[in-house]
Length: 71
Image 1 (cartoon, rainbow, N blue to C red):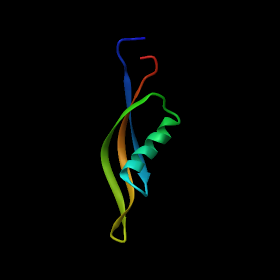
Image 2 (image 1 turned 30 degrees about the horizontal axis):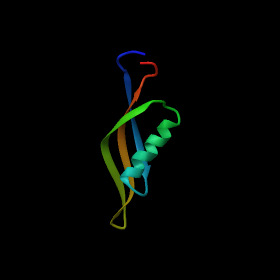
Image 3 (image 1 turned 90 degrees about the vertical axis):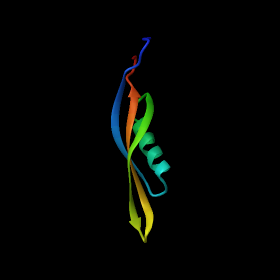
Image 4 (image 1 turned 45 degrees about the vertical axis):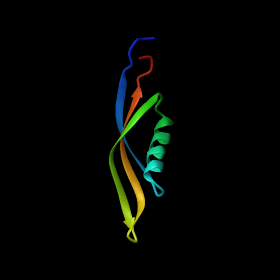
């Protein structure tokens, strides 16, 4: 085990018809299926679709950091 960690950062876009929080969690859940050691995220952009003068769908762009295995 080393005394430091190395991370990689990727960008994801999550979506949800329910909320911004669900959009974030949907993106992280999908990423977690194929990427190990997810550590942190940063919301960099939030968008939405409007229907009948209300927010109808949410999209969130995330930067997600994950630890490189054995680092």
